[in-house]
Image (cartoon, rainbow, N blue to C red; front, side, top):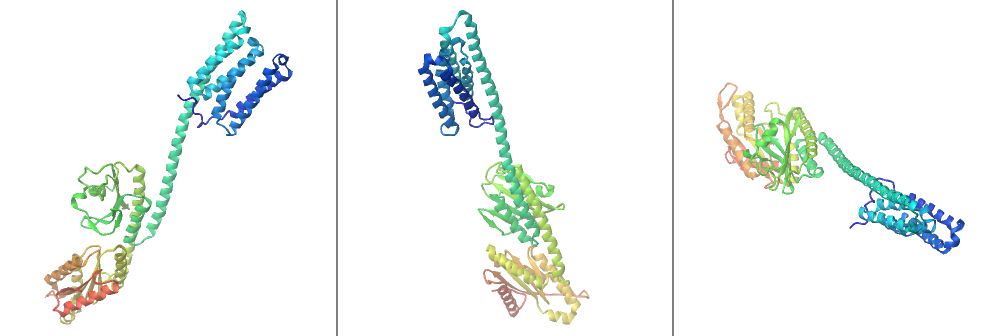
Length: 519
């Protein structure tokens, strides 16, 4: 059974010093009895003992207030001491006529404040018994009422102290609980604000990037380094309404390989894209409209990246625990998605502006300067992320003869028509450029040699089957020779890739033209 009430954590002022002062005033009263009262002659030895023990008791209590001893034990010792001292003072200072019975009120107060209810009640019983025994020999018939009144006051006072103390401490507990909750919420708010500030700072970095690939890379870094998601991805939608992973983090590593998302797994993405509204799902394990990145994922947030009412992409975040994400997580990811959308829009506008200065006017393809710059960038990216990269060189067979026979205007019409055919054979992410004269180049990011050969053969076949027309609407049959090089199979630098693709192209011409060759 617990002896003491828990008073360590309290908003109420500590009364230790006040109680010590009150005990000091009692010592003054005992001192007066010892040195100035006529009772000393009769009970000299008793008062000297009382004085000495009381001084020692006060010194020990003072040391406990200075954390030399346990303050609870100090209070308990004063209660025990008073249960012996006060009856003696009453007996030797007039019995029923002594005023020292008032000290019992201090004892009752302390007992009710520091002891558990059962033990404080026992103290009250002992106080009552001690008082009656100390005045028993001096009671007259007409004193019975005073004795009953005094003991009654002890009980009423005790009950009042217990009730007031319980009420105050219950209220105090509720207040402390509210303060703890407030401190917790304040701490969470401070963390949330710090998190938002970091996200805002990194969003400013996003806004300064003018290249889509770099925006995606920085966005992936933001999702992992600052937001610590278990799984996350950046999804784009192409012109044919196909969804594909532009980048994703799963199995504890980043993957920048472009991968189309299966049709059966895009219903939920399509809903988010159409409504342009973020969704947070507690458990996706039983859904057939979404396939998580990680097999153990349960919670998911899908947030559209929207800038000026136009969808720029989708961010997906996953967690292995069901019902893991909260509203604040969705709010933060939405803020990131908004910043990323603006960054992607800026990158696209920058790209369009650049294209105005790097586009060949006749064929609407990129010019050589842009081609050289992008090949170097793609080669650097392929090396950094260990990705495949291929280069296709396309040259029109007997183009000089065609110009001499049908004129340069017909030659220009062939060049323009050929560029349209090649554009149909390549992807949106591929970089198609006019290398010079009748020669074209195609950079194929994340494409190994075997896939590049398929694309090269597709271009050669479509060109050979197409009916070109001269400026006089005469049917012209045109063929092309194609040379291919790939990283890392047969080229380590972008210069090597160009040289090897050129060599393959000229071998195709040497072996009869209308061929696809590689090294």
